[in-house]
Amino acid sequence: MRENRERCVIVGGADIGDYDKIKEYLTETDFFIFCDSGLKHLDRLGVKADLIVGDFDSHKKPDTEIKMIVLPCEKDDTDTVYAVKEGVKMGFNSFLLIGVVGNRIDHSLANISNLLYLDSLGLKGCIIDDYSEMSVVSGTEYVEDKYPFFSLLNISGTAKKITIENAKYPLDGGEIDCNYQYAVSNEVIKGRVAKVSVGEGRVLLVKVFKA
Image (cartoon, rainbow, N blue to C red; front, side):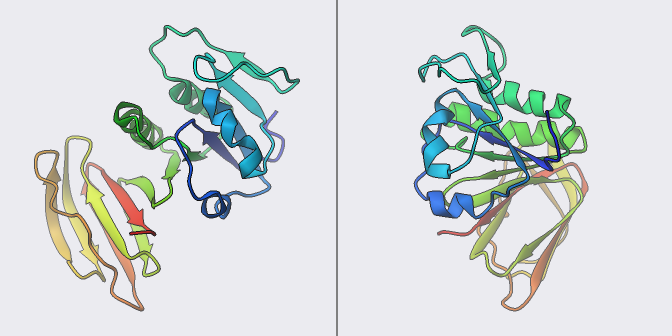
């Protein structure tokens, strides 16, 4: 079913304003899982669904030959969480989530937690919305100067031995816990590439491309 697909792209039902920007991140080798009302993005994204997952409480169940997993409305996993787990079972090592951050803060936070889940499995995960890229850093990551701002947020315990190089606000051996988020709105030094390293724990790296 995977064929020669390299990455699993999961499409949720949160609003997308800038489809052209989102489409810049998509490739012909992506495997697309659409979650319930994420199907409203199908035509605007200009891709084909490889799998549809949902309980269809927010979108009409489509009449299609595309493989579909119909979920019960009462369940522990959201449609998006189920889709992520399905992609993991299929053997994907890299995941891109779009249409998963929006007006529902509860769903948005739950979807960001998917990045923690993927990182705990040693897998790569990224969320793209109209303004930023989000990923979990538990080792080393780089930020190019094309991003106006970037932030480190702790959403899981305490992160220690944090180093930020080639940025307006450098850090050497810092510690960030969930009670005090001080590494917000940093800037890459022009002409340089910022280096972010986390020695213990993990942080959420937000690369802002539209302020």
